[in-house]
Image (cartoon, rainbow, N blue to C red; front, side):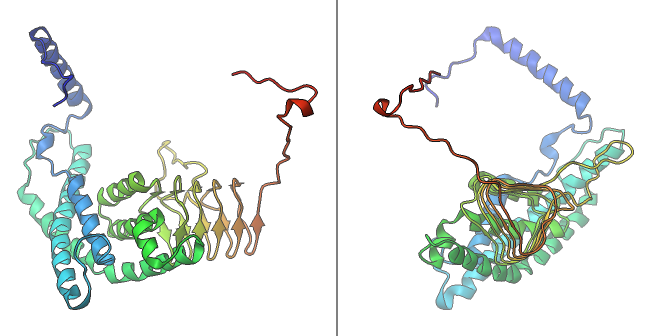
Length: 337
């Protein structure tokens, strides 16, 4: 218990009650369809994190938990973990589907409906959640195959790396692409909420922000990683390497005749095979294509396409140096802040 916490004085109890009434009125007026939030099946963040951890232990057995996952026990280990993930993920997907349908219903319905945790009409979505969970699990061998090339890309691309084990145990770029490849598969299955929740959890853990819609080829390496942003409609080829602070973003957001955002347009760039993009570079626009085998230098601002086999660099800045030795400077500068 916080030793600085104090019991609320009786004179303030009434003020808290009045504040609760005002907030309830505000919520009822701005969110009239949300009458009992606790009855909506909200996907739980801690359960999703448990699923991510279990999936990482399946994809990299022996690295991320106490069990070795090796030898004769590997099949049994994988079977147990897959069963756990199937149960947890089925529930999370079902919750997401039900919640998404209720949001859609609330937008199209004027009447307030008291919602139970599970309605009779939700049972079809419960079955669909399990089917989608197994469709996702069937993609794990291909995800693992891609990740093996990503591990190799990190080792090949970083002279400071001593071995492949170090990549799996230490590299935030590998963690980010691991979760992204899982989230992208859920995104392709059109599962609401969960892919973005996974992406934002990884963003918080690594500082790398990859939208689950981004299409990323094999043998991908993010070196260092902090501050990297990859947008939803970005398409990245194979054998691509990017450094910290790189943004693959949108130039502007196109709108329809009613002024609403057009969410289905391609807004982010295409990066072709064997491209290297150095630190703090920004590449913008859905029509921007960085041709294969190109190199984009540090701190470049790029909004137009680049032909294959092109090197793009900023003009070298002019440095000014001065001596701080008073004996070597006739008029030393005096800075005061």
